[in-house]
Amino acid sequence: MIGPSEQGALPLEGVRAVELGTLIAGPFCSRLLADFGAEVIKIESPVGGDPMREWGAVLHEGLSLVWPYFGRNKKSVTLDLRLSEGQALARRLISRADVVVENFRPGTMDKWGLGYEQLRLLNPRLVVVHVSGYGQTGPYRDRAGFGAAAGAMGGLRYLTGYPDRPPVRVGLSIEDSIAALYAVIGALLALYHRDAHASAGQEVDVSLLESIVSLTEGSVTEYAVEGLVRERQGPTLAGVAPSNAYATGDGSWLVIAANALNPFKRLCAAIGVAELGDDPRYQTNEGRWRHREVLDQIISEWVSARPKADILRILDESGVPCAPINTAADLVVDPHLRDREAVVDCSDPRLGRIPMPGVLPKLSDTHGRIAWTGPSLGEHNDEVYGTLLGLSTIELDDLRRRRVI
Image (cartoon, rainbow, N blue to C red; front, side, top):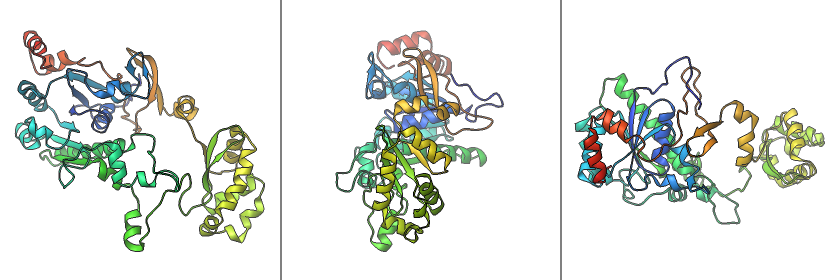
């Protein structure tokens, strides 16, 4: 496992978070907190647990290959929140927490007696982080919200793909992940305000839809002022050239982004057409964009005649921004990612030694760690309910028998 820095404690040590939620957005938020030392107690249904335990493009002997990543550094307890006894036990646990992270449809927590107004009476310093499709208020509040719907409604799907083809998915659950990042920011802001100002806790309301809208750059303003609606551009960058994906001679793909004058001049020299770097037609970005098809043809012919390794070496030595279009197979062995611990090997009790993305961001003195991979369902029941809450063995056995936990 990747351990914490020897220079100091992890920055969130002493923070206890209770996670109520499934799949990606909420659990990704709390996993980030756990990476930096927060004690994250994940509440799961006694039957099946988080569906992420069974998700993935492929399973290994029935085991999810994404669960070790999404569940890492968390403690798993089982609890049936539909039962009054389960709700009462959840309140006991939350009364000792700093943060609750939940991503149920708005109103679900209130139905279980776990709404913010109820919890703040129990624990005034509590920070409750809500992650939902459309937010806790507004006309869309009660809609079922998944990442694909948020990406479509937020404008991301419309801009993804080729202009002459239907909009496509990005390829990852990017909407959930972006919302999770905002949720972490919100949690940390609320904790800081609480502690710096000796204040009460508060709610953090993050929606997948608004998380996507927040990343649309100037597109809303462009439309309001100039009537411009951005369209799908395929692999190019609207209004900027040359910036495209090119096929190499050995069947690979790479991106070249020489979209400023000096990199463009260096690219021209590197591919043997230095005179184009001084051509008046290409001295401005507007000119290069107007003649982008000519430039792309010249670049494509040079790239397609060479293997990927040679192209990357030549352009890198020439100071031209370029990069291979990597697959997971490339990420696993990339020397830079390995050196930076952006990809690390972890020991999983069920899968053995496996690679996964490392801890981010990097802190010089109190960097995070991967202490363990995703736990088995209810692995920490005895520790949390017995040691933390003080339930006896007899009480725990009775709760198990009645399927409360």
